[in-house]
Length: 455
Image 1 (cartoon, rainbow, N blue to C red):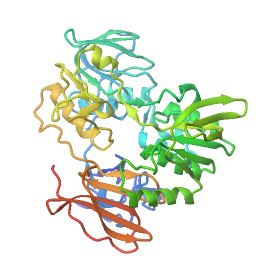
Image 2 (image 1 turned 135 degrees about the vertical axis):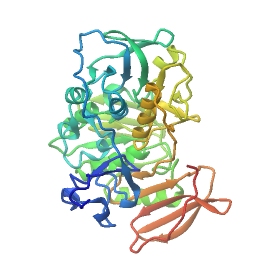
Image 3 (image 1 turned 90 degrees about the horizontal axis):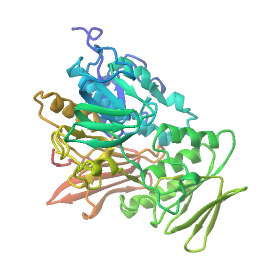
């Protein structure tokens, strides 16, 4: 078979889940349509998160071209598969199911319009001046038609009865053969931050509201929370020309994840962009008046801003799961191989699940989780989902920070390379490297470190 005859391939970024399609290429990154993956230069970077070519692997999307027409939203549904949530997880399940069975009814319940978009792009889109319409890759209605899915938009799940195989919604009760919970996680907003006074960038609607509030003028913006999303948003807003203050209880940005040498470099990087970091402070009040918003801290500091963005972490909504009697620990507990919950015929994936007591809030594993669930629901043999720690990449474009491997908060870090432009550290256990952390870009190829991790 000639090169021209070979089917186009796709490759998935192990850090952010972005798909590189050979047929489409990456024109903005200098790769014209039709660029084969093996022909990509070694110094090419993921256009979203910035990791290198080596952090991509072959991706084989389910073929979902043949699908029955969706039933009208008003029509009663035969018992089929019901999915709660229309984010990446929900649509991934619908696609995986349809690749295996083109006839089984699928109903997708979502509180929004169900538009398809890549969520990690939200924290880097302001500086690129991207509107929500540009981020949406496909409307919910179009995706439903393509996959033969009955889409119940603007609909809320209000009750679940596993024994009866029924989901109660604001548009009536749905019977199901199998149910998938893919409703994600919501922002964990502290009581001191009134929801009406701060933006949460966890979905397309919230992003659109913040963009509209900032559009056309330079604003004073406070970002509350210096975790990954907070640091990414601070850089993005600063690059868009806004005056940014990053506020956190801890003394350094990303202090709970990174060792001190790395947090110091990150703090310097943010300062160089014009971001003011207020660390070691506790907010006691957020109020608003005609001049904007005011933040008060326990140590007596006051901050006057135009807009406040809360990046204070995520929490899984437990009401539906607990009401149904599902096992729950920082998320819906699922079987690590099948993603089945403690209730028969009920599965879960994505941000709302818990594996071994820890939330699983990564984009890259979702496609594999969806494939395992689809096979389990349809009774088709499959090896099951195998969890592996994804690459963690902070989307601060001017200072790449990449964490690989089974990093442990209890394990000490040692420095491998400490240059002005590049820091490389590693964690070792029993004489072997289990994780690496890189900050910045090396002028020459970095030392090779072989990680030995559990599959």
